[in-house]
Image: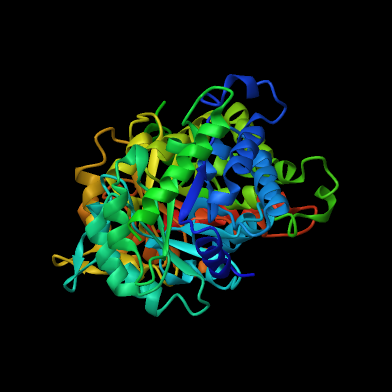
Length: 270
Length: 270
């Protein structure tokens, strides 16, 4: 099943736009897990088991595994999700962007070594550098468009020919890069006006929406401005708010409660 | 010693602007090395030993190690260069770009886990996402400006306020981001006109210049258009042309000859 279809199934069958970010930090993992052979994997596994019926996807952030030399626990986590919950796709948030020959290596890394179902990519280098990802019809290619951080506008808001750069990216994503119906866009919840503008450009194309919770994005504003006519089209990520809802032995239960609350709040505005 | 100083020493003491790219591909490594316990490291070590007196820096490309699960051999390679040739800095070509909290993890990965002296980064997310790198005064931060690939112009050449995006990046790099004198720019050898334009904007700021050899960049045009008034300011990378100059047991000798030829050809036009 391709990535678009898997996500749509999650939206429909679980009535959920929620993505749980799996960004483990050894310093914050509950004390009772730290002695495990694979503490990051055990932490992720507990979070996944507690939330799998409430989410449309999971999103591990590559930096957290790379900085802690925990690449093997990233593979274990993705394998576990695929084996135990085969309907749930995994987005590897790695923000890859490099010239063609190197982009091919990155596509191999992300889809073969890690076995991810989708990856985030950076469009600054141009369309040819996205091709090794785009040609994988079954995989999702999630292109940075308007990011959630405070300085996002430095480059993305520059005007060219009466449009902003992020609008140009949205147009190219829609008109040039989506021949295989596998493109999505990253649009931050912290910028609801831009969510609305981009939704107007790309029609039904799904968004990956970071920025709620610790980054301060408002759920109501994000959903109202970013949703499609059918009330879907968004994968709304929460990482820290769910993972670290409680730091004790009941962390997974607390994570489930936060996930359920988030799903309900999102659904109120769809 | 900081990265700027190390590079300048290389330019002066070895009279060399050459950077050897260490992008090993297990499929192309000479047959007699394939049985080694750490074939990628052995290949890199032989290349380094054969060329260390002829280069100003080495540049491993992260994707080649990540895709082959050879991160430990990347660490071994960087450690080896630092121990055996302490004057030669190492650039990790990883093109990182992510929001602040994640960028901090990437800075930790690149500078602490891998021990690199400099890193390539993508500016699309804005200035705040570069800060965790920029604040490391001793490290080089090499910002993508005008890349070497055929589609580089898709975004980088868009015009805004009478300037192209890559010119805006060059201005920001020079005026806003270089408070610690540790910023460099990536400018492809395949675009000599853009090299000249950017040199006019940033004065003495060093460039990392990919794109000669397999990508077709012309050395004479790149050096004439990219050099500073003093005939320096460039780190000119060659990867495949040097690494795979010969596929037999004499590969290191052939790599040395290619490196020496490249250094001489570059110096002819400085």
